[in-house]
Image (cartoon, rainbow, N blue to C red):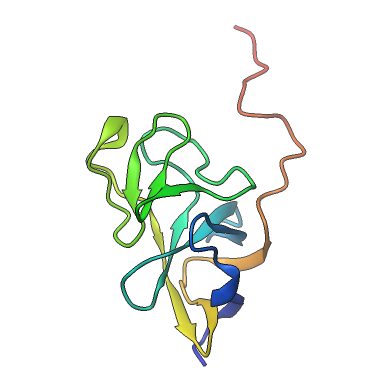
Length: 137
């Protein structure tokens, strides 16, 4: 068993779509992470749930859109390889999804990235104001 926190079983990660969970970073800021299937060993990858082109959630709570082994940004349609995180098309071309280190053992996925602490299954609780600023100048 890896040194880390169990996140989910491999069976809980959909073949098309994503499994969403929340971590805390070194500054205690909550961040969303998605688990997606990948054709390369160990069969699952973890990425920060944000398009690097423009702050946009890839999984808005009902699974990330995917096609042919790529995660699709819902805003601009850029596609990220599920295994490498790299994008070679659309407005996000040349960017890579930020990776979160995981390990797979005995059919379970473990968070082993020392930069993050597992918080809970699902996304960040968005009870506060949205991304629209309420400031006036």
